[in-house]
Structure formats: C-alpha cells, structure tokens
Image 1 (spheres, rainbow, N blue to C red):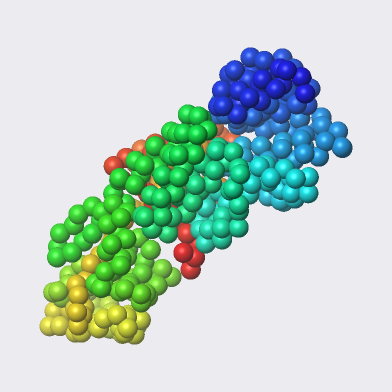
Image 2: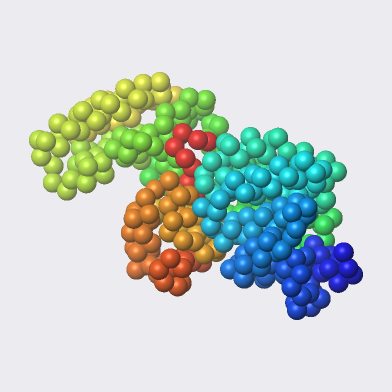
Length: 405
C-alpha cells in the first residue's frame, strides 16, 4: 500500500474525511475508491458513497477477500446511516464470516455492531441485547470499544434501566477520549444530555409532573399499581398485565386509574374507550362486558367495583399511578424514530414500526400538515425529515415488537 493510501486511511480513522480526499480524490484504483466512499459517507453524501464502495468491491481481485468484505461492511454502514433497512443483510453476514476466517477480529466486531444497531432500529431489543452479550471487546481499538458501549447504552435506555445506561455511557466516554475522535465524543455528549431529559409524565391525584429515566425506574419498582401508558401495561412490583393488543381495555384502565381514588363516570368511560359522545343502552351493555373482561385481567393486581355513577379501581394497599408518554399523539412512534434527524423513507418507517406502508403514509401526511415533518424528493427517492424533538427524550416512545422487551 502506497504512502498516500496509508495517509488517507489514517485521516479517515481520525475523523478527517477532507484530509483523506485531498490525497486520493483523483485516483480510481480499488483502494482509493474504497477510501473515497468512506470519506463521502463521513461527509453525509450517502448516495455517492454507495456508488464508490460498489465500484471498489468490483475492482478488487478474487484473492482480495478481506478488502471486498470491508467494502461490503462500509456499504452496510452507509445503508444503516441512510435508514435503508431493506439492504440485503446476507452480504454483511458473509463479510463477517470472511473476517472471522481470515483473523480480522476488529472488522468482524464492527460488522456485528452494525447488525445489532439494525436490530435496535427494528425494535428487536432483546435480540440486540443477546447479540451484544456474545461479543468480546477485550484488546480492541478504543473506537470500537466506544461504539460497543454506545450500543449497550441504547439497549439499556430501551429497557428503561438508568444505572446500566449511565455505566455504559461512562465507559463510552473513557473510550472516546482514548480514541481522540471528536464525532464519538459528540455522540457520548448527546447520550449524556438524553439522560437528563424527561422521558415520561407521572399522573396521580389529578396532577402530573415530568420524570427522567432514573425516576421512571424508581416508580416502576415501587409497590404501587402503575398503569404504564408508554407500553400499555399494568404492573405492581413483579406482577404485570400486558394490554398492548387490547386497546379498549387499556383505555378503560387508564381512565379508571386517572380517576382513582374516586370513580370514573360511565359517560367518560364510554367516550374514552368507544368514542361515544352520547350514552345509550348499547354503550352501557358493552361497557359492562368490557369492564368484566378488564376485571378478569386485573384480578392479581386490583379489583373494579361498580359505583353509583360509574366504576372505580380498588386496591388493598399502595396508590394507583399513571405513567404517560411525554407527548400524547397517535403518531408518537413515527416522531420518535425520526427524532434522530436522519432522512427516512416510508418503507423503512413501516419496517421499523411493523406496520403497513399506507398507515405510515397517512401518519406522515398528518404530521406534514401540522409542520412536524417535511418531505424531500419525489417518488421512490422521497425521504422524510423531522427536527429532533426538544424538551424531552423519546426513549419510551420508540417502538418495540409486541411481546419483546
């Protein structure tokens, strides 16, 4: 490898893409094409980066397996950064096997981290956590250690565990300082800012207040009955009832919890659960049926008793608290995904939300009308952008596959 290629690679490793391009911008050999592609990716020119990386992969000979695998891994990272979640992952699996067979531990670890980050974007948090536990970060460069700890930080956030998140962030800070790479330090600083932002609202006794992640964890560990509107569950200590797939029952439960220790009237319950503005006998009959179903689901946590004007939650000990999202919006999950400031396609959003593309298009149309998002491009090239949501963290708004924690 000649001196210009070596100097360009060192510049890229230190986070200086312009310095790398000054040395190789006019060269078209395979190594230079690969480095140019990485430099363009660091500058945010993802489309040009992918073209250059594919040209580089074709230019390398059949004996240069590691170099080809590195180009595939770099393209996978560009696809992830540009939120192309439909990029063929089997190519990255093959590159990871090549690195393992040829003893390139660092690039094998880097490819594994890319796979884990993709799982997180798709809401497969448990799978991502299991995959991270299998990785060995001993004797790895500080840059890779920092990236691994940042992934561990995000997993802890998605699980709602403040102490592990804080510990992972501290390790990431130390590794980023050792690497001397400014973008890594900036990523750690963004994580530190996230921990200090409210992630939910606590509603109790008709009043509400914001909570940071550590406070949310304390509330969930208490002996009180917690109606978690972020994940649509009811829990008390280690017992939990999941109602994410039963929206009517959860609407009734939340209405009863917000009225505790008093009663929720039949009119309010029917309006919240059924959208009924005028109560009739049909609504009353349906309400009795749904309350009976909810009573059966909650039998290990609380009881529901009829009152003169409606129904009331009854607890033998402890209070009833509602943990609500920082914002109440039917499109909150879409906003949470787009809060990273990246450009998303409707197909990528649909894949990450486990929803239909048409449902996502309707949500984006409503958000565009309210000025929350904006579109770039047309047709298949159209991408959607949103400014980062300020004032609170979107941790508990991020989607997760049903039943996966």
